[in-house]
Image (tube, rainbow, N blue to C red):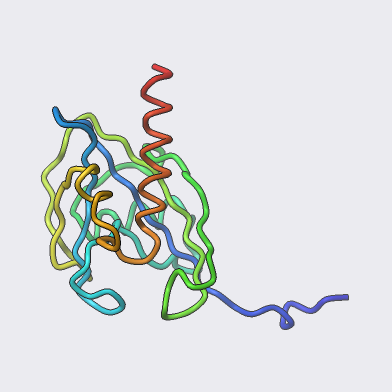
Length: 154
C-alpha cells in the first residue's frame, strides 16, 4: 500500500487566457508581474488556488484581482493542465488554464500583485520568444488554437 506521505506536495494554480477579436486578429489580456519570479515580465492573469476553492472560481477570482475584469466562472472553458516540473522556479506547480473569449476588449487595470494589465495583439506577443513568464507562451498558443476551432464551429 502506498502512503500519501510518499508523494511530494505541490501547488496548484489557475491561469486565464482572455481573448477577443480585433481588426488585426486576436488580442490577449496580459498582466505585468509585480513580484518575483519574473518581476516586470508579462504573464497571463492567474495565481494559486486556495485550499477550499474550486478551480474555475480561483481563475475567476485571480482574473478579477489582477485585471478588474469580472466574469462568471461559467463563462470560461477549461483549456488544459500544465505541469512541466520546471515551469515555476519557486516550487513544483501544476496550472489549470481556462479560456475566456470576450466579444470585445473591456476596460482593465492592474491590481493585486500585477503592476499593470493591457490587451496585446497575440501575433506580436508570440513573435517575441521569452516575452511571457512561466510557460504562458505555450498556454497562449493552445488557447488560440482552441478559440479558432470554436470560432470556425459557429
